[in-house]
Image (cartoon, rainbow, N blue to C red; front, side, top):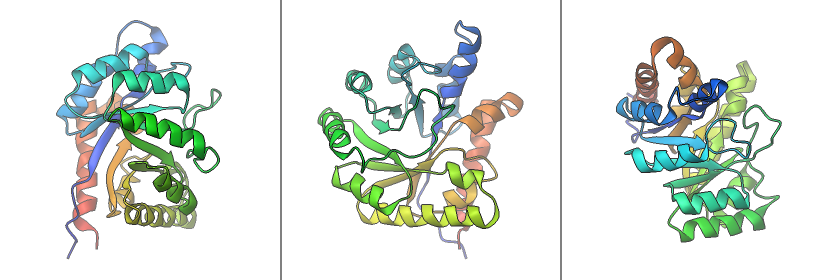
Length: 249
């Protein structure tokens, strides 16, 4: 008999709706409209990453999202003074600190909070003082997770990119690391999320990790929307997640 696990939230990242818009300029497709469609389809929150170079999401997108959507906004940001100022002005539900390199196509790994502990702790304090929950996008490394708890983070988001990229025994090893990281984070009182690279074929084993309470998924869903529509894509992802939660042994 399966174990009936707590509800697993789905956060939908709408960055790449803005990527398509920006390829031609203008206002189409509209990431705000996409966010509302995702919510109608069952998304529990919306994630948007305002990068230094504004390659997809722009400042006005963040402002409109905060003013328009009916679900929590997760504001992904680099640990810079500019982004802290925007977060303090916008006051999203949560600010997720991520590593950011100008030359990367997408986020390539977790934030090294041990190597920048003092800086990140200061930023976390500023965000929390304005009622913003602090999330850290990190690898499933016990020392990084312990440091996240030490600096007072509310949430850790475990990087699933390597798990999605690997196959066979290498993928199984990555899954085990994520499972262990979720246990450690949960035991330390952190709210545990996961995300990066997840699709229909990879979400099941991650969704079945009992300690996880939210998955953040973007690029795959926007790609799937090209052929099946955004609402059906979100609904299908929601279905896979719910099945995983209900059928875990």
